[in-house]
Length: 409
Image: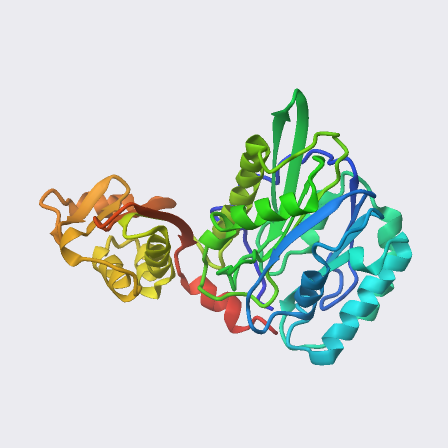
């Protein structure tokens, strides 16, 4: 795998100060799944009574861990739960060997923590198509369970990294019925990022008490406007997984009408999603693509993704070139409804095109200066209706090639 020598210039200043989420403990270790001396396995243990919800990739070639998790989400159980994750090997496109690896690892965790195997969720990330050396993970389970502690979430975030240049964490609190509810989450993701009902690898925990159907409904809904609105390279991973665990330790009962809790969860999900884009392989620019005036929200999303995924748009951004013609091209190819003569495009607050033509007030020098910023907004108004969407992406630099050209070496 290409050696990552520097942290993304878009990275946060530091890993956030994460609160303890009562009812969940973490541990991490170096199992040598692919590389020696590298922390590559994390374990989270949730207390009895916890509920777990999740969304997953819709890739037709999704991994054995994803298929196993999908079969378990929604099954009842008050015995607690566990999440075990490894980096270095995705256990994808590994046939029956992949299934056997998942069964062996989840059974090992089940025995070590004395919880039913259907309450053990696993994820894997890394190289595709190589059998998992799962015995290395199993050999570490004793050490992992013995090291579980409430404040181990940062170590867990580091254990799930692959080409990531920084660990990703986010947290917030919300007051509900006079009590404080905490939410904290971690994520990994840098390349092979265009989620499709999934989210790279993301694990979020709260001390709220949330019935599983309510939690599942919230997570599925919020996913559509957070993780499913980011893209680095238009490639949907075989392993995308989002799991949210609610321990209930705060005693605060959440219902489908708990708007404050849902908004707090949305903030954590969106922050983690944007951190993944900030760590896009080789990225130097964070770009928000905002589309308004579309015939429908679905059309707006399709236009936004076409712009965000265009190699020509992304390389122009990398070169700090305000080439709005490439945005016009991306809109035209999206397949969603558009009318050249009602189209308007802005870079930041600089109107570059309107009514199907370059804006009479367009200032090329000002636009070029704007493109030098690290965070950019491209706004498109279709002039057709009330449909809106926002998508986040990054530029495409030679660094992306450097990382991926020798990923398996």
